[in-house]
Length: 245
Ligand code: PGA
Image (tube, rainbow, N blue to C red; front, side, top):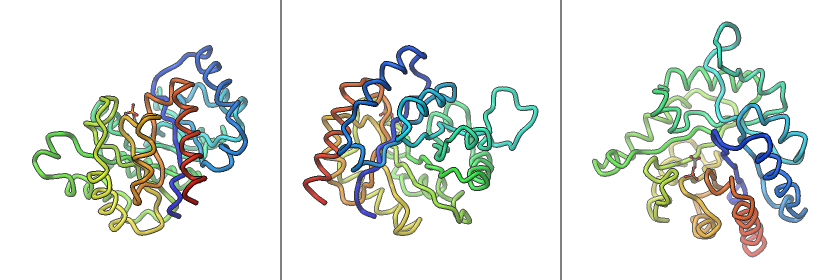
């Protein structure tokens, strides 16, 4: 379980049909040995799910979010059931952009997890502290509050530790910071739950992140949008795994 081979590309609200097609054309050229050694997933905007499914059928598709509701009069929402019906098998849940921009709270996250479980979608619950919380020494209490929603969750899930101050900023947490938080999370959620790191992960930094023994993979935002950078990043992961496993 310690093989750090999970790479999830979080496209966020980026790309158009044309640029997504260009990016997927490059990703479709990733060599077989790299594909085989990684558990790769793309989290596109919902409108691009069919495109990803068609162009790279070997890649797992991850939703960026699912609705807290089951179905019905919720204009703009996309349900876990709809995502599952489109071949989606994973979903980010509680990404910090959802928590801070859309004020998503634990009650909503709890409902989303329930829908994921019902439709066999593996949630990747995103957790992480703000800079103020880190400076106040509150990292552990913040993370505990965020993972509290998983207490009675009995289906498979993953955690992505993404310090808010490291997302899209070019700042990466030091290996020591990541290791401490991952160790703490692993103790809290149990030994079998994969824990990913996210926050300005790039081709240049992926090696140092994978070397941290408590890291099982990475959630990659900005660097997953540039084909050269993303392909270099996944090739480095495969190279790293070749050397260490
Ligand atoms: P970033 O985003 O790699 O651009 O920092 C990561 C994320 O928010 O998942």
